[in-house]
Image (cartoon, rainbow, N blue to C red; front, side):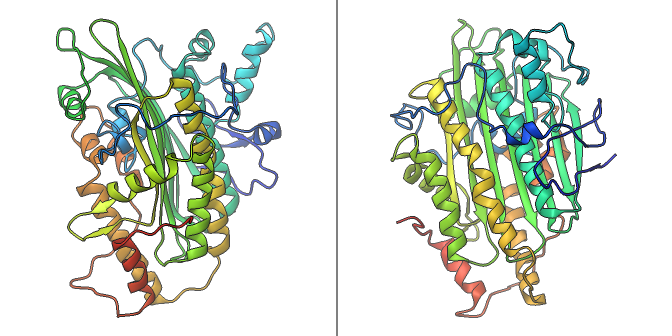
Length: 442
């Protein structure tokens, strides 16, 4: 069953009926007003220092655990995640009931009220989340669920008549996820926002990839328990003047044979316009920079360069888009400080992107401009299937959810033999930027 959101006017929260798919119904306006920044045991607004200087916060062009996107399920961002996300201690997901037992303490009722604002109930059982409110797995799961709900509601408000399909899935190896997909809307051709919360034993291939990035992992009887969770999204508007966006934020935790736990965060957000609009580029990058600067002035330039280097289509000699930020293996200065940084980045998604869509979604365009959009979509597909290690990892990982892995691909794309834009054309202008990245904020 598709889930009809319609216009969100003042921004009410929505919920699904119990189960995997169901109708979205207005639930509570107080949820929309609550910022996605309050998590059990978090300080909230303090600034952190020294981030990005840890031993693993280096300029590797490798995504996450090679599960980068996979982790949140890119291209199936919610897919590789299907191969690593959550933790062995977590119990099966709840039945989905939203009733609030009157005998529950106030803090438990508060968690239930927060969950009522999500697109679906958490993957982890509420009792388990209540048992460990200060655990990073709890904080991160609530963050990705709130980010998913915030982005879906913002997209539905812009589209006006869109149907969001809310698909709850399980991974037999451990964990599951929630995929929210809108197709053929008024404004958006395809918009997917997925979360994954997965756990189990890391495959030997995944462990090998992590070791190649400098991680020392001690297995017990050949097994390496892990948990991982993330939110991932790709949004393709119909109008060629409205840009495509991708974002992904994830958390990974591994328990070694001696009981030692390794953890790290990864993620990023990048913009892929069909035509260059300098005001849009400046707004997008400045919004991301402001989020990064709260935690250190060195973060944005470092992660901006990392993004430009990662999203490079080698055989074309060009980037997928005009960049943004990208980081992986971030494990210093502390778990709480990195979490607050990721939280700031997640909160920057809507203000960095939605104004651009509103600005361009109703602009007129020509058949030639639509054709160029389809050709650029082809480049998007090429990168995701040929170079994105997270996508590739997910496609070849047992138990992966293929539909979620390929969620990032557009509904339509085009390839023409020997196509080359005219010199000094608008099409040639964007190609120049894709071949030679610019500094948009100085």
